[in-house]
Image 1 (cartoon, rainbow, N blue to C red):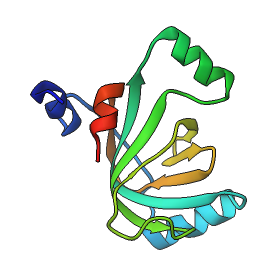
Image 2 (image 1 turned 45 degrees about the vertical axis):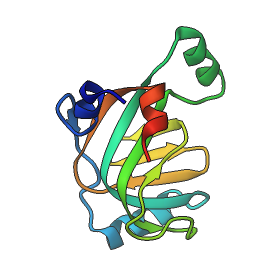
Image 3 (image 1 turned 180 degrees about the horizontal axis):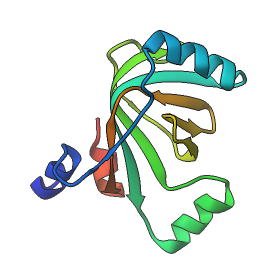
Length: 131
């Protein structure tokens, strides 16, 4: 990853996004009630990543009900299925939808975005380098 892209990923070229302003306990209750048939994962220190792809790749994703958008979080607070431990980082699969109250929804998981985060563009190469 080149230094210019790294600078973008750590916050120089980004848009601030409001997340869920509930406590972790309150957010877990809301997620469980509102999305009863989904696993949920509470995260903080997060970024919504708009993947830079071709129109053809975009059309393929859209035809599957997905958007070229992923979530990257530096800190898992709680995962309802125990897939991630508190303090782990996580990168989601592609977004199905986004609820402005801080709920980022993929095929298998509702990510509850605690606090403010950011939104930014990312290339596929840079995405693969996130670990």
